[in-house]
Amino acid sequence: MARPEKIRLGDMLIQQSLLTPDQLTNALAEQKATGRKLGRIIVDTGLVTEEAISKALARQLQAEFVDLKTFTPNPELVKLLPEAQARRFRAIVLKRVSDKLLVGFADPTDLMVFDEVNRLLKGDIDLAVVTESELLAALDRFYRRTEEISALSKELQQDLGDAGAELGDILGLSAGQEDAPVVKLLQSVFDEALRSRASDIHIEPMEKMLRIRFRIDGVMRVQNEADVKIATALTLRLKLMSGLDISEKRLPQDGRFVVKLRHAPIDVRISTMPTQYGESTVMRLLNQGTGLLSLEKLNMPPRILERVKAAIHRPSGILLVTGPTGSGKTTTLYAALNDLNSPEKKIITVEDPVEYRLPGLNQVQVHEKIDLTFSRVLRTALRQDPDIVLVGEMRDQETAEIGMRAAMTGHLVLSTLHTNDAMTTPIRLLDMGVPRYMVALSVNMVLAQRLLRVVCENCSEPKPLTPAEHEWLRYELHDRVDEHKYMVGRGCARCNNTGYQGRTGVYEMLEMTNSVVEATNQGDPNAFIEAARAEMAGNTLRRDAVRLVLAGRTTVDEAMRISNQMES
Image (cartoon, rainbow, N blue to C red; front, side):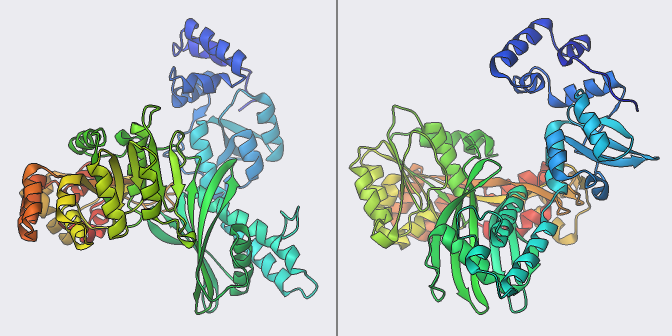
């Protein structure tokens, strides 16, 4: 294909009836005022979709439009263009056609970019059009840092074995030591974790190797293995970054620090623990640049969403969100706070740690070492005249009782509790020693939840049920199991061959209605369970998981994987 001709985007969109002259005039005015690209303004204002613009450009240039959601480029060819240039020029090598390379461009109208990519690839190229968002996602997948991490690990190992090397230089202790081996290695690990959507990084010394694992979508995956000799240097550097005691190797330590990745601050919580072969280090990554979700985007069933919104807009009482660690409880509570946040309301949060920053809130970090405990901060918070209080977790009887009293005296309280389901939560509070009348009078609603992995849309396909899956589904669907189609992901580059990409919530809800409150006051656990079961009417976590299975959002295997946690 010859060098493309210069195209005026606005005129082309009008010519293809995708934009009106008035819409173009308004977009051009905004471009003049803000300096942003015209195409980005048109997409962001919802006038034309990104895909529609790319297809229009392809038609105008008589070029191929390549949908990177369904097309998988050749990884070897992709790397013919260095990552820095691929991102700078918004280009990706897709495949070889005869003696030419087919290259996808997000902006095929930029002739200078076309010429530069042609020069870098040292030969004639054919042009294809791709959307920018899909291009960037593809670059994230293909330019993974696994090889770079391995190379940096070996470099660090060599430096540690060099008798003339200064430990301070290796660890990057001096100003301007960004090129120190351990600094570059950790930067690559953090960058790869962010690209992989990892929530946690595990650095684990074993007998003969150092293992680096990421937790992605709730599942652990080995990212890299290196010589165990570099483990101490990595741990020392991380301790220095988080202000921990580098001389203490016998006791666990906890800390935190902030790293900047892709111009966004990432809050890192670090925990070290002595093990047989060295200190195991686990880091939880909290992306402060990620926008908060609204309640409407949490995938709650309509009935539960309606009742939750009603519960959080009551003037007093407690909403408890329950589930194991990593089940999305904090995300749900902050979605509720996002809905409630306004200048007319005083909101105080008591957390360990503060996981999200939300303007307008008074957020307090618990610090056990200086006796700044949940109960102490909560007592003080109630003297600050709040309307709404979020308690990160009701860990003990004292904290629970203070929260209950606050709810009974006109405050709305949001909190979490570690229980398996909704109906056993009030019983758990009683077991903690909270008086029965407090539970009955203060708790408005219990919301239990889990996170299920979502089938990758790019490689989703139907799959027959196994006998075990068929039997599991009969519990909810009875004789209607064979009436539905069940999806799995076969695995592709987009989902790292796992068949899953992302997670979504499943929920169940128990409202403390009059009948449930009366059963609570009776003091008979069996009577309470019966009343709670009648109130929930079978709308359990398991049933909500089956809802996602039938919608093709998750697999039967994934629903079964956590079914032992969901049995009510």
